[in-house]
Image (tube, rainbow, N blue to C red):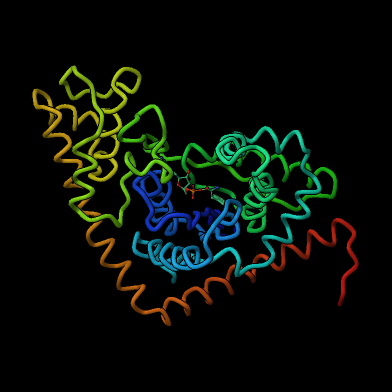
Length: 335
Ligand code: TYM
């Protein structure tokens, strides 16, 4: 009997902020770091996705390098996982075209992230790229035959589209794509905004968002001013105590302690104590994270070598899959 092969895992993150935030870390990156040892893992900085909204080239350039460095600082090991930049692998855009031709206009129009973002931009000024964003995401996933996609809750709908497109292609042209499963963290799949705990934490709302590369004092200040409630009892109840429950989720994810243990630990104590413990836990992670990120960014040649190796390993897989897709749909080979 042959040894069972490891599942293939793929996920991506946008280089659209100077720093990843604790939602990214707890919803996605923590899973990536642990999965790299038990899977054949591919992680990419999705710079093609980052240009679907207006951007500044110099800023995108800086953020792409920083994002790559932050993935390593968070614990991804480039000798274990394949860590790469999406635009270094042209097959992503090529497969996106094919999948776009299988996607219905209505289907793409139903994507809630497009609806939200295009509303913000004004419906007419949203780009076609923003509209086709989830199809590119499907290409990212299907190109690597990913079995599992570790993401936060907000990505579920896009992953359903990926599965639908994979199934549709397989039905029309023969079995080619693996149907990917969504993998979300229990508890931390949706970290909430500290100022508005009815919304997810997002870089677009910086007041309620803790960025990992912020200074320890800025991190502490944001956490200390988190919105709670007037009950003064540390209890996990997301329905009626969203702010406090969010703080417990964050502390639990950083400390590895169960939420119920934290409830006992903080029983009879005030929210100030809880916030202090959350701030200490986040800063204890963020300080070495920032130091590692800066160290990597200070050695650009080394970073470039890692990116090149990652891209090469990713391409080895992507080229082969795209070729199979081209054959299946009837394209004539140039060779
Ligand atoms: P992005 O860059 O917005 O976010 C990266 C990851 O962080 C997760 N996340 C959160 N998790 C919990 N709580 C939060 N408040 C929170 N905010 C963000 C996201 O769910 C995500 O897992 N479309 C993707 C990028 C992408 C991708 C892919 C993902 C492109 N291609 C292929 C998976 C597979 C995105 O915008 O993620």
